[in-house]
Image (tube, rainbow, N blue to C red; front, side):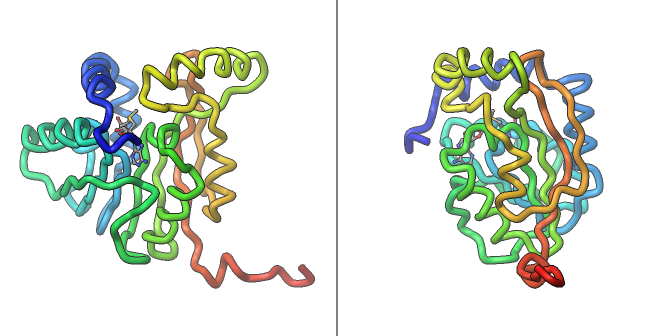
Length: 215
Ligand SMILES: C[S@@+](CC[C@H](N)C(=O)[O-])C[C@H]1O[C@@H](n2cnc3c(N)ncnc32)[C@H](O)[C@@H]1O
């Protein structure tokens, strides 16, 4: 992420969401965030599309590294009835929070864009308390012929969408970072954008380090 951010992407994303943030997408966000409570971290909050859907029991810190997006997120927040949401400038790769300081974390359409996916997931795992939930909704690499379409489109797509990657294997990356996936649903954001949403859990260090009997 360039320190000065992506002014045009922030503007086009805000415009795009006026058309896409309705119907199934709104319902998907609402379901993803339902039941969250306690201290919740959202990374890459963008224009703040999730803000309206947090339950009142959640105390949310939403980070966003792009100053243009951050301004839009602040405007979204200001237009909502009072919410327990605090928006801050920070990248997912370097979270300015103590270990185990959040009960839950949220990523929506952001793991495609972070510069260092493994580092971002390691940071999320670090700041989540053991047993804490990571609720995710992300577009992912396709299968079969779609892989070819995605790799052909990637150079232009990545340029237009501020470094978004069409072909990330998010499910594998979550597991590699030590998360356990406890719920997973597959759908499509668009015909060329397979999407996964679900819940991953940060196991306690003891459980993660345990060697299985005979292992
Ligand atoms: C497609 S937008 C999604 C925004 C929002 N999460 C949503 O669901 O609408 C991707 C967001 O990821 C943010 N982003 C890019 N690199 C990031 C990083 N290293 N850490 C955190 N967020 C990042 C971008 O600035 C942008 O706001």
